Length: 106
Image (cartoon, rainbow, N blue to C red; front, side, top):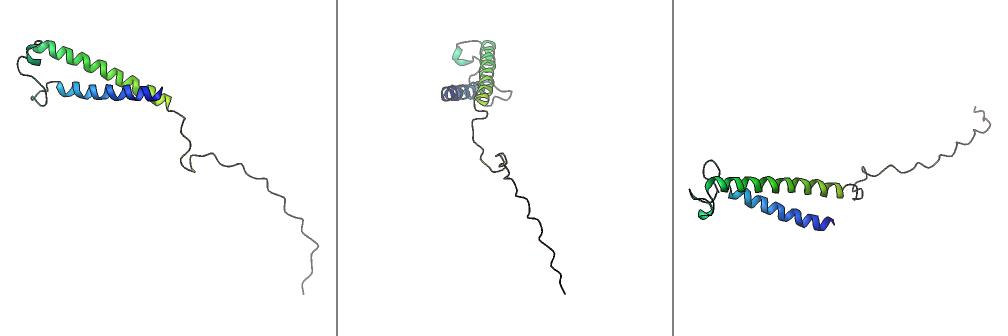
């Protein structure tokens, strides 16, 4: 399921990039069209509304898919570092032997 969502996420990402690049910026930038917008298909205002609505929908889909993939991938990875792994259980320490009789030294 994660693979299918990842592929859908890729398509949404590419579509979002394309729609953002199609929009007309303040300085003209990479925006397509002239005063007729999209080759006379729609008015300038209609084109802006369509692209704005499409950007909002794709942005929402991108956000939802990102959160879904993050939640699906949570906790599935094994620890990659010894610092990430829990500490090993400590072996019980045997008590030290009782000291023997004191030997006098000369």
